[in-house]
Length: 395
Image (cartoon, rainbow, N blue to C red; front, top):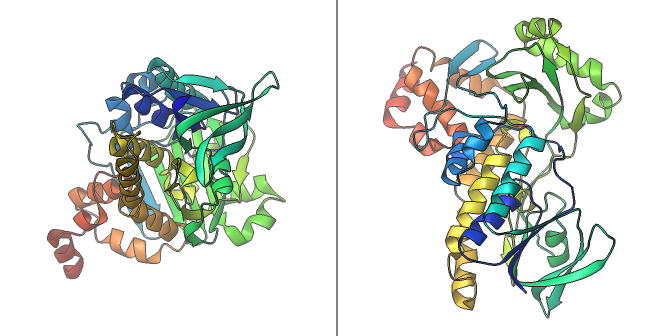
């Protein structure tokens, strides 16, 4: 019997398993894929996530992976352009946007180094129950054998279509309609910073990633998905041409080196986070539009928050229930703010945002603090301090 079984070994699951193992628990980590394997992603790790990687002893692995360091950010919207970067967290300001076939194995290696029993190529088919309490899992091994394992706690880090959420009946406690669809690819010969461009109905994201490649993402309104998916490449290129002409010129000197990837299935929700014998982390508990690229960072934060809350109390019923409630309550603070922020951007209506940003031009401290609200280095409440409010009133 294990203390903890974690289903899913990507950005939420591997860190959760690693941190539980470091607390002395016996942990099984199950992953249906075989690493390295790519997955849809916006790749970016904000300063908040970078600080956690450093705390976990994994940041040097990212630095050594060929992921390009990011030290500068640019935003252009109608009538405004600002440049700067987020404030540091724990003295760390440089960020990275590693490919997922690079990042996910590094995270899994960290779990294994902590003593986690990591099994790849395993399809979890069902949960085991004793009454209403989850007591374990049933899964198929790579050899095709169906087996079961039991645990004190089963962690669903199994994504938006979480089996754990489905089998436990975890309801959505907050839910909003899908707002955007996105398509992206990787380009050579298009050097970039972390760049964002928007106009009404379009959003462009640009990030340097591994192997001197650049990730170029285009966002469209969800209602355009049916049209865009029928002619992806023309729509994708036109989004850059009309939203970021200077970037489009740079693209002419470069080359797209992979196919176009995309999705119109970006659900927005918070689920009930826990119940008897189970808990959800990562996209399983909270998913939102990828337009602000917060998914990886928030998966890291949730892994740390959950394991810190439980500590050495996994086998004490009352203390465990209190810890899981604290973890769930934490999702209503910073994570909820970032959720609402993503929905605001995903409206693809820049007018109110650009009106405010125009007033920041020439005030670098406030520009960097604005970028810090996206990274987690500065809360929205702290951003709108008396000094900024005075500036906005005078402009």
